[in-house]
Length: 313
Image (cartoon, rainbow, N blue to C red; front, side, top):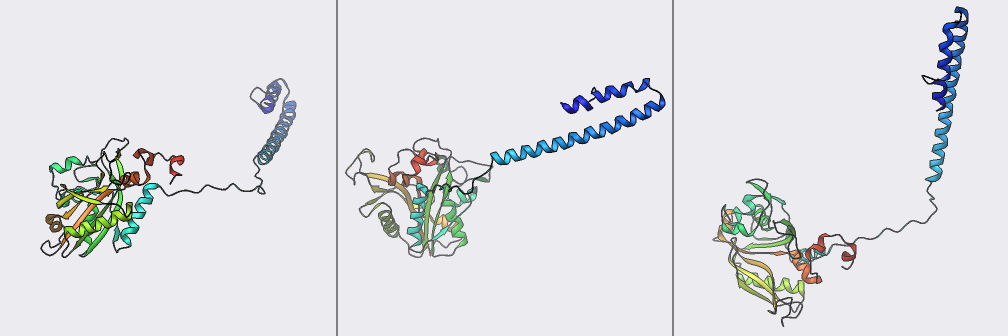
């Protein structure tokens, strides 16, 4: 405001210079020279004043924003391993302890590996059970970790003992028991002389390690295109010890995973001699295991990032 008052277009100095026309030539030269000197003095004074004000402003800001480094620090909180990750790490530890390789594969997968190489060609009705996120006719979000089994069979030579875990995607509604993204574990074994008895023995030992030594297992006939024969695998209810309760719908059993002997066509498509080698495979949802182990009644709680929930595990 002060600058405008003295040096503005309508300021005092401008008004003074407008009166020069009434003066003689000698007076114009004298007063013009003096006016320029005054203008320079005022401009210089304003710059000094602005610099001093800016310095005062900086000093005030530093004083107000000062940090007392002598104050004790605030302890940061510790994070926790997510319950689903806890189950995943427990499963990996069980299988790595008996010599299995832990392998990984892409979440954006080719249709060939996700379906065709697993004995599900285009228009196969078994695809309808896996509502799939497609990018185009070739690329999709994998619907199961079984696709990694094909990569494993292509990359390894028998004997193959591999476990794969990770996120899979299906167009399921997001409710208490379903999620469009969930975690899965798949296991494959390919060797000479592998039988259904080997599958049952390994499943029984694994499920006892995971749910407790008193856990019983049973196999029921089930269809999966990439195994033959296939089986649905149940465990005795961990809530009522098989006596029957609301959790197991009074049956005493809870379905836990699908399994079977690797289909000969799947072996051949991965360039494995099915006349010499056989194998078994099974897959299981890790979120479902976490729900059972920790007594969670809503899968959405795993995705809410609510510390009140996560600190319980």
